[in-house]
Amino acid sequence: MRSLNGSIGLLLAFAVLGSAQSPNPAPAAKVEYGRYLSEEVAKCTGCHTPNDEKGALDRAKLMKGKVMEYAPIEPIKDWHKTSPDITPSGRLWTRWGGEKALVKYLTTGLTPKGTLAGPPMPTYKMSQQDAEAIVEYLKTLK
Image (tube, rainbow, N blue to C red; front, side, top):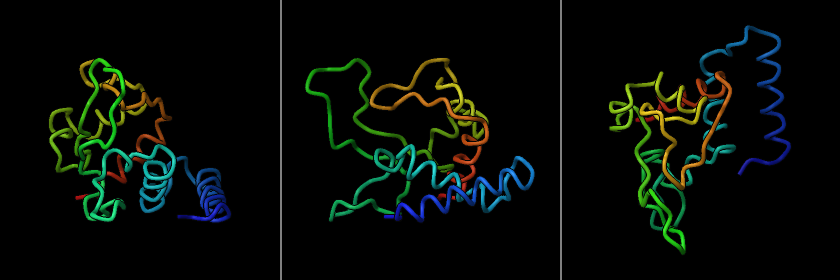
């Protein structure tokens, strides 16, 4: 786990990159920012990454989808027992039409069908830059 000082330093580095240069950070910085947003802020790995035999995230299967370990006590309409593989090799990229659709989803909260994702997926309405950074990071995962 990153220390608070390390996280603040990372955030300051991205703030400097964003203000001192063009609005689009360098590719490596954009990927790292997307990793930070997806893993540390939005916590995507918690639902989209399987756990190993010790209960830790299986880093070899980042964002490959998993069976959820929890469920609501009372039934919730459209509750998903599994989360999808959100890497480029997953069916979601093909079904949704690629990275532009994922960016649109992260900025609007709406799937390509114009609906919200089913629970327990929260509705995100990120900035264009943040959504693009997350997708750039996801593109690095196999």
